[in-house]
Every structure is written in structure tokens, then in C-alpha cells.
Length: 512
Figure 1 (spheres, helix red, strand yellow):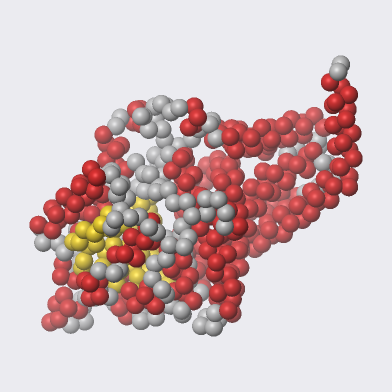
Figure 2 (cartoon, rainbow, N blue to C red; figure 1 turned 90 degrees about the vertical axis):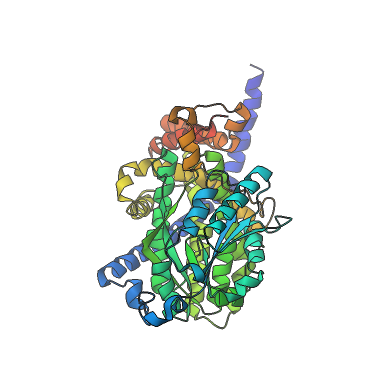
């Protein structure tokens, strides 16, 4: 009985602040989220229209730019007709995949006297470093022009390694640089040879382990949309898109003119692309040229990757927005595309509105029925956006509900990372290498052992996810008892998704 007066005081205080404070704030939040949702919706529809037009009009890169097979112009020149290519392979403690990466680069079907393979080994594990060194010597004995480079610190992480690699004397003889993961030079290089205004040719990623677990299938759906739609639109309209960090070939003169590699953010590849674009250089994306890549299959690795991919662009936007606006070399429309579409909508608004609107604001309206969300904002727009995203991976359309729930969970980390990047605080420059299991590890371990759970409880529990799960569950229960908008169906499903991730039951588990 003694607790009743305390509960009464809490209820009375809630009623006092509800009308003058909570309701206006929640209404303002709804309006802001609706505006951001409309921005995101318009961007998605615009990109869908552009991709459809490109398909219908057959605007392949080979038709937009001059392209001829290499080596057919003058047979007497022999290998001299080919540009000198530097293939850079940055590495850091990659025990499982170093042989695959080096072997694929050294096995390129490109004239052996017109290519330099540069292995940039930042490994801190002496055993791995020795394994990589031995592998490089093995290929050198076969006649491959391979350079093994190390440095005494990891300053700048990957960007620092790539920048240091460009300082060696033999690089001066090279015309192009490939951040390598596959044999795509025969398709990519002719664009650079025959079109002097092109700085970058980017290939599409093809994921070798997309079927490893449900989490990798979800990643495939998101990244397929990025490559098939976002990169295609950027290439077809403004000849600009973000470099993906691998599976691309750069013109070294363009790279140098843009200022080279910089380590001021965790997205050195995007940083370079934006600076090169502001110098007037063009980029080409080849959607039908696929390069094998591996997805992170443990939740820990995926979470760190998403933090870097969300925090870095937001921080780069903060650093470069005024430089882009003041630039005199590119058109006004291209500046609007880079600032508004590329950065603001896709790298900031998309992350923030997904979490704030669907995981915080809409559930809160259940507790404050005076505030309503129009059906077009909470049903129609997200449904259309979801369907437009799903077409990128037709084989996974039946998983679209799971994808939506998982993307909403990950939006917690993306939104948090976006604010960290915009405000430039905390872990803004945190760089954690994305761990990938590799086929070698999977071959050595039975599939059951791979998924056997041997993790400490502290490593498995994720309190942020569990907190949001509890909030959504309580809002769902309140909606069943007192509400009439039937949000509880979504709220319970989303709460379960947050809970599953919160207890660590997602991705692949590696036996310790």
C-alpha cells in the first residue's frame, strides 16, 4: 500500500508534462521523420527510374565511352602496347585468405613485364608476417614481379599503407593502380586507356559466402541494391560514385592530383573518390563485371564494419561539405547530387530515420495517442521503399520481412555511428579490421563445430539491443491493452528481432 502514493505521484507528474511538453515534442519528431522519409522515398524512386531508363535505353558503359580490346592496335608493339599496372594488396593479420589474394593477383592474365604486384603487409602477428613473406618469395621464384613491403607502424591504417606504398621508386613507372581482388583488368583498363578523362573503373562485388547464414543473406540484399542501383545511377548520371575500396582500377595521375590517400576518416576510399571528382575526373561502374568478395559472417565483425561504413561517410560529409559547395570545377547539379543525394540522404538521413522513426517515434505514439502518424508515412512509403530494395536480389524476395527487421536492428548502430561522425566525438576514428572466416578456415572445421556456441555470456549480450527490445515489447503490450492502431503486430516482431540479436544468436559462431 505504501507504494501507491509514489505511483500516483509518477502518474500525476506524467500528466502534467504530457500535454505541454511530450505531445508537442512528439508531434515535431513525427513531422521531422515524415520529411526525412519523403526525402528518402523520392531518392529511391528517382534511382529506380534512372536504372529502368538505363536498362531500356541500353546505356552500357561501352556505349557511353570509347572501349576497345587491349593489344589489337599494333601487334608489333607487343607488351609495350599495355599500360604499366601496379596491383596493391593491403593486408593485416589475414591468416586465412593471404594465399588466395596473392595467388589471384600473381596469376593475372596480363603481360608479366607490365605489372607490379605490391603486397603491403601491416600484420602485427610475426607468424602471419612470415607466412606472407614466404608466399611472396614463392611467386618471385616463378618470375612474378612482386614487391613485399612492410612499415614500422600502422599509422593511417589501410589508407596509410596504400599511401606509403605509392612512395616507392618503382611506382613512378606505373600508369594505373588496381586495388585488387580479381582478374578484371582486361575489361577495366581499356576504359582508362581510351578515355583520358576517366579516373576510376569500379567492378561489382559477388559474394562467395552469401549462403553461409541468414545474416549473410541479409547483407547480400543490402549490398546488391547498393551495387545494382546506387552505383549504377551515379555512374550513368554524374559519372560519380563512392569507390568501394577494392575491385577498382585508378589512374595514378588522377590519384596524385586529388591529393593521394588520406587517413583523416575511416573511409579513405570514399574520401579519395570525392576529391578526385571535385577535380573534374569521371568514374565508370561496370555492373556486369563481378569480383569475388567475402561477407563478414560473425555479428561482431559485421557490427564493427557497419560502424565504420556509417561513421566514416558522416564524418567525411562534415569535413568536405563546404569544400564541395565552394568548388568551381564541377557543375551546380553535380554538387547538388554529391551533397544532397550522395551524402545527406543516403549517408545521413537513411540511417537516422530508419531507427528514430520506426524504432522510437512510432512506438512512442502508442503511449501518446494524441499524436497520430499518417498511414502514408508508416505504411505506404516504407512498403514501397522495401519493395524497391528487394528487387536487387530476386532470389531473396521471400526473406524481405526478415531483412526489414534485421535492417531496423542494425539501424541502431548505424544511427549511433552517424551521429558520432557528424559530431566528431568518441570512436569517430576507430578502425577495426573486418574479420572474415575464409574458405580455408571452413575447410578445416566441421560445419557443426563452426556453429557451436562457446562464448562467454558477456561477449554475447548486447545491452543496447536488449533495451530497445524491452521498449518495443512494452509499447506492444500497451497497444494491445489500450491502443486501436494495431501497431503491436510490428512492435512484437521487431522486439523479437532486437532480442535475438541482443542475446547474440545471429550470424556464425566460431568454436573457441
